[in-house]
Length: 285
Image 1: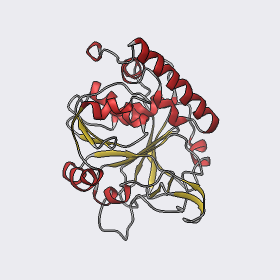
Image 2 (image 1 turned 180 degrees about the vertical axis):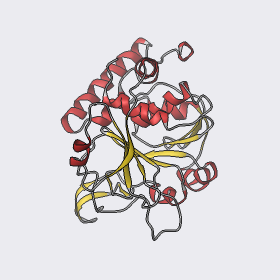
Image 3 (image 1 turned 135 degrees about the horizontal axis):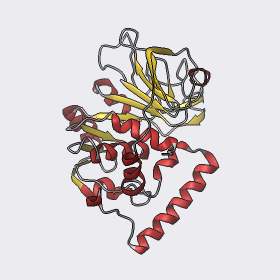
């Protein structure tokens, strides 16, 4: 069955989630949200969500939206707290599994979400910022990463700014990321060196292509595998129940294509809302 790269990434994210876990959800990360919900609807029915959208604790779910994204978390939250309470109280207490999307990532999983090029005061590109990443990556033991567009601009030998902690040998706290998925493959971090290691190539992707699009020398697992494609059921859930609008595709686009896609999604969402067709019947799945 045909599938898109956004669907494959969300499925890979889903497969990293185990039942009864607490998972943390950031802002504007629909690939991760779709993966979490897919896990809940397949092999992890008792997963609990901690969302940065309203700092809500949730066990229920709703389909992904753009203008209606709050319904997914705040509208179904068991409780909401302040950002400081979430970062300083809830996250250390629950020890959630959390996916971050780095603007840059180095060979040991340190990452940057602040700026690229130039200086802090006059950057070439200002990124969204670190939020609570510098705080939580000190103590979280279940940090995972995802990169929708694998390229040498993201996978770099040296960061322009470090806002997320990886496997630094000089640091005593934290353990660094455990896993990374991109549009080319899946990676872990070799236990002895803490360096990124390729463990799985997505179907049709070659090792040569991955290395050419990586700005440092990759370690490669002795047991390099091919990523298992999405199943028919996983695709049906993603397309019909979890994300019928296709919000997850926004993360695989950039520039004009992303803006055009966003306008189309908002128009489609408004139309579905006006016709009362937006929310899928969760009990059918």
